[in-house]
Figure (cartoon, one colour):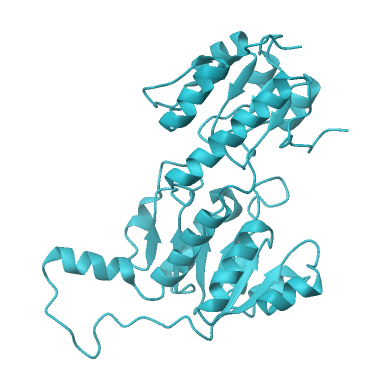
Length: 328
């Protein structure tokens, strides 16, 4: 059983309101400098705390978990994705892992829709042209892009975020196609006018825009590989605001350079924060710095979920957002 005021190490600087509330409730070791902890700092923290609050910038692997102190009993992740935490190793040590699902759905869907619009309409190129001072005024052939109304949107992963994207996309006149492990209820499909494709390859061959909303795990890593990128037509725009590892980045770059893809909108990267320099040279790629969930409202809501999970655990109850993968 944890002490009444558990010792909590927070690896990154959180919103002021969340920092203040944590300080009221727990014995907190904060990171006001907001510099990502290196491996040695993470190991030290995990040897001395009851609760670790990591983020996507922290890789909590089996070796770190094996070396953690006996008092570490909860990893309360600040964020929904947990692919940076070795869940099997945590289970072996009887360390509970929690996350913060649901709170960033609308923010991520907004960013995805912004990318869906921005790439075909060449918004980034147009903005750069204006800033360069080289724009000579309107012309009938200037900055021609493509409308998105009437196009076919393929969604990989029709969970909370995928459905929020579908809701927005339908209002823009896109037809909705999706691939999911399980088909949605017919009433949900009817809400979006969505068509389920049990075979991913078949869907990829029949869409104009592809957007990805599936977690990164062993099943989804390189899900959109060179072969599947080859199934996409040259008119297709690839949008990824999920995780960089789901798309084979080398194959995507090769397709973009060869004109086998029309463009891409990317908010995530395989080796963040490093960006493939070949992507930087491509004008038909819109790039944002992993900011799909970057709203103050979303960060506060995430922090509130972290606090709730810690409080439930400290009171001897099962946290509401315990990650069950790898647990009996």
